[in-house]
Image 1 (tube, rainbow, N blue to C red):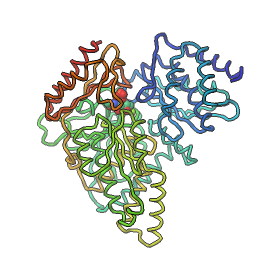
Image 2 (cartoon, rainbow, N blue to C red):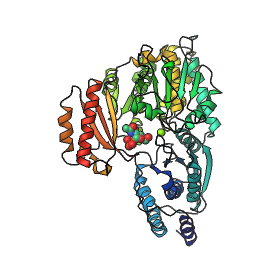
Image 3 (cartoon, rainbow, N blue to C red):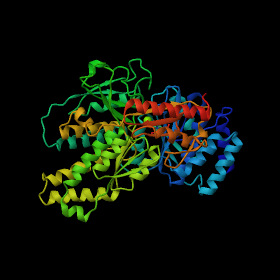
Image 4 (spheres, helix red, strand yellow):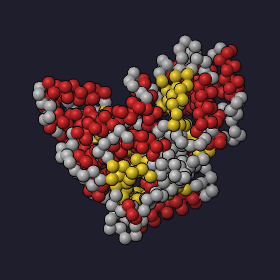
Length: 554
Ligand SMILES: CC(=O)N[C@H]1[C@@H](OP(=O)(O)O)O[C@H](CO)[C@@H](O)[C@@H]1O
Ligand SMILES: [Mg+2]
């Protein structure tokens, strides 16, 4: 690193002194915290992203300024690698180190050391970083901090691509690095063209299209889905909680709220009984469905169709298409379909997926872990119960599918059941975001599959019945006192807590419970499942008491 470069970092870092006592970790999904404390962090992640681009031969990197489902006063930053996936986990320790460096001098020496280790040189090539943000008011000034961070690495270019959903940014980064059209318009066009293609392949046409109510969480998703609606037919959408009607981001609205609390979001009521509803989270990478049953006497009861149910619907549809492939093909090309869940997946969903004879594997919480496992299959479907997920197609399987489609057309087999199935799979691969979970593309796929099957939301819900479950957040003085096994289902620390949890679990039929420290909020999460709602609640509450007595409550 030459003296000009050192001077550039020293000068810009003076603008963003680190708040006293700030200690951050890259966590489940990047850095998050009170927005007022994050300028130095975001500036430093700007530097990291420029270095990442240089390391990868000037590939385009993405930076997203968002705190997803957190409250509006929080914000955060996460990095997209050139593939559109999350930042390589190998770089997370460096992210932690520079985010916590206490002075400009320490920052420079950490960067110098890391560049030497990673063999990164500045000056030969230029770095490129796309910057996006959600609708949080703090986003604008944090974006400036990121720009200055990127710009402090000489010869680097930061491109502000404005207010976007997290999955849009990841999609654009991926497309850009593949040399494809990569603007927001291209994203919308891609969705509408592949959606149209799947609609045209529906076996029975002419079914009446029923209305879908969308809860936009008062965030960026509502805005974007309104834009997308312009280019869609075969959907009847009504969008609420767009953020323009005075509602607060994520406050009693959005996918995280609906999934965790199992209640209706603001703006929805008993008048909506029987109507299919969908809820997005604050940065539109999560999607859940819900409805109020028509026979619900209280009007408050909500039937939730979470990520597990979306995963099951997708798995069923993909399996149906794979089954329609000619037997000779299946022998020639063993298509491995697999699904990935986390410990938060409802036990009934796992039983159902196994009944479908699917390969079900488990990953740690956080999409970076699920994505990695899903990429091992020809078609890998992953979902967190909270509604973050997607379907990955391996490059080799996709090339095989495309060649197969051409071959069938050449053999005048266009219109055969096999040809249709192949075309559907190809269209799903372009509709569904290959970079990260995407509420917009997920919603379009759910809608087209329901039309394909001729199913109502109730019928879809009947695939299996969720085991009653309860999730509770516990505020404790130090959540890092909880250390779990790599599967996250057993607590190794504090010593003795797991035995106490096990003793509680034993008291319940189909009881299951675990605790883990959140990677995005300052809480310990408690999850419990049992054969009745009362039992799940009671098991969760006894585990909460154990957490409080072992860790103290704050
Ligand atoms: C139980 C739960 O929903 N955890 C969420 C939440 O992580 P925590 O580490 O549990 O705070 O936010 C992550 C990022 O959005 C998401 O990937 C994950 O599934
Ligand atoms: Mg999110």
